Image 1 (cartoon, rainbow, N blue to C red):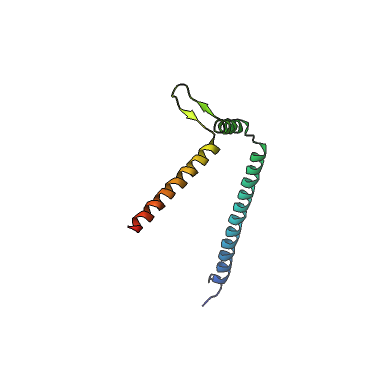
Image 2 (image 1 turned 90 degrees about the horizontal axis):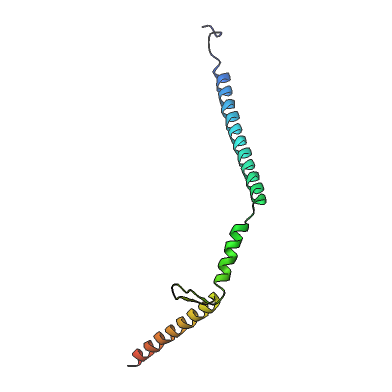
Length: 109
């Protein structure tokens, strides 16, 4: 039989595999460059941004929870957060002491 009419399957296979490899490498390279550019954009955006308004709100909030005061409309009284935390800790301690005293008195009977 004539060999000149046959397809060169080895060459077709090699070209096909090489094409797949080149395509995969190209996709990975484009993805790497894309994420590299996204990270660079995020860094420059963060470096150029200012948070003056947000910091002012946070400072106002910190100031309002760190001083005594009263709301004339509702009649609510405010105390500093550090004092409130101390009061809650003392109340919790006294409740746990009461529970332990009650448990000891029940065990004794």
